[in-house]
Image 1 (cartoon, rainbow, N blue to C red):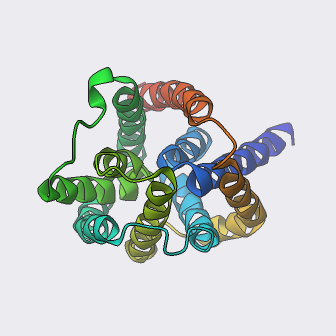
Image 2: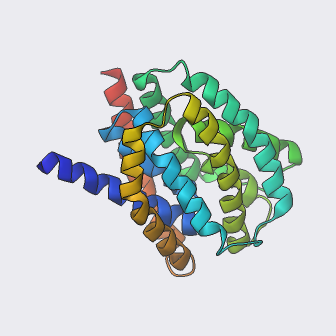
Image 3: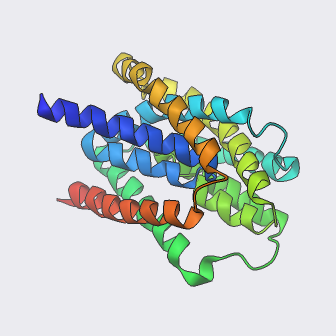
Length: 246
C-alpha cells in the first residue's frame, strides 16, 4: 500500500511539474517528468501516460499565449518536426525497454550538458537550414522521450524573440508535434486502457500545473527553476542508463 501511495504521489508530482514547465518555461524541462516516470514504470508505459497529459497542458496553455507566437519560426519547426516523428516511430517499433531507458537517459544527460556547457549558447541568428535540423531532431527526441525542447530552444533563442514570444512559440510547436505523435502512439499500442485510466486521474494535476506555469512565467526566476531541473535530470539519466546496463 505504501509503495502504491508513493507511485501515485510521484506521478502526480511529475504531472504538476510538466504543467509548470510547459505553461511558463518553454517546455524544455517537461521532459524530466517522463524521465522520472520511466524510473518507476516501463518506459513505453511512462511515455503513454505522459502524452495525453502533455496534450491537455498544450490545450490549456494555448489560450493564455494565443497569437503571441512568431509564426515563421513555429511553421518551420513544425514542418521539420513531422519527419522526425516518423523516424522516432520507426525506432520505437523495434526498441525494447532497456533500449528506451538508455535513449531517455542519454537525452537527459545530453540536455544537462547542453544547458551547462558555456559554448552552447547560440551566437547570432541561425540560418533557416539550422531550423530544419532543429525541428527534425525535436520531432525524433520528442517521440522517443518527450524531449523535443533542447533543439527547439537552441534555434529559437538565436532568433532574438522576447521571453513571452518564445514561450508562446514553443506552446504552439509542441501542441502540433504532440498531436502528430498521438497517431503512431495509438498504432504502436503505447496507449492502453490502464494508461488512459491513469490519465483521467492525473488530468486535474496537469491543469493545475499549467495554471501555475502561466502565473509563474512572470514571477519565478528561470535560473532557480532550471537549476533544480538540471540536478534532477542528471541523477535520473544516470539511474536509467545504469538500470538498462545492469
